[in-house]
Length: 372
Ligand code: V47
Image (tube, rainbow, N blue to C red; front, side, top):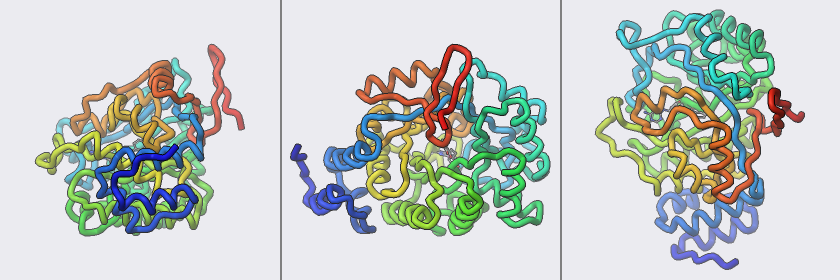
């Protein structure tokens, strides 16, 4: 099929995509600047189908946020609370283990565990939390702690990032989620998340995790004060690390939700921005296998369309979500497995339940099996 490419800047990019050639920084800028979303979608879909055909992945997961107490006070965030805030919460270990069991009826295969930077919870507390989860739910993959949490725990424990990661891994952490990357550019970071680790430190921590054999995801937060140059720079830094380690499994573009944050004056992203971010990521990140349309953040409606604009994954059942809902998300907190199947099928794609590392999961009425 000969696609209609209205924007002449995209024609040489189409040739590269067809040939499987790597796109440059300038190509990346053209992808973000073009209004020709159909040509962008055509190209991203070409790559998506080359890699995955019609397959669209999802998982049965549950988010757990042990605490929202956070010393970082990032302007981008509505979730983190100060220790003395009467609305702040911190679960006991028993509460974490109990909460994990809620929603168990759907045989969760992954716990996605992230939280605030709590000034008193120790590395040993988190290790015990992991050991307790493994003891109670031995089959469940523990995708836990952003690079930012690892950096903070390392600093507080006076250990290196490597030693901290080793201790968490030995206690049961199986992989790491992609959060906390935001935008690597320091000019932007100083404004949206000035107390977090730097972009370089995020990359270094991910490198160390990958060197230890741990896989991780990666993200980019867009739609705040960053510009197109910052976005392309961010994606190319992820691509460079992936060339080095091969440790990233999935990239998730995250749209900024401004409600209840210090940046509430910033307008919300549009569906156009969200779809473009998926397509640009698929085209630039030629070495990261999966691009996720996170339905909690995009809404199930836009996530479904994203499955034809470069995304091959729609995330999971989630069950309980706080970070986006504190920042004004109007999506539901969870989708049932059957709803995810229907969303994917109605986009003309073939659903495949996966575990965190994309191994197929098959189910009988009462058990699930991960095919290794
Ligand atoms: O690290 C925080 C972002 C991230 C806001 O790895 C905000 O599979 C928008 O990383 N508006 C957490 N975004 C979510 C995350 C994630 C989600 C789904 C799957 C995976 C995965 C990872 O959300 C944070 C930060 O980058 N965030 N506040 C906000 N107001």
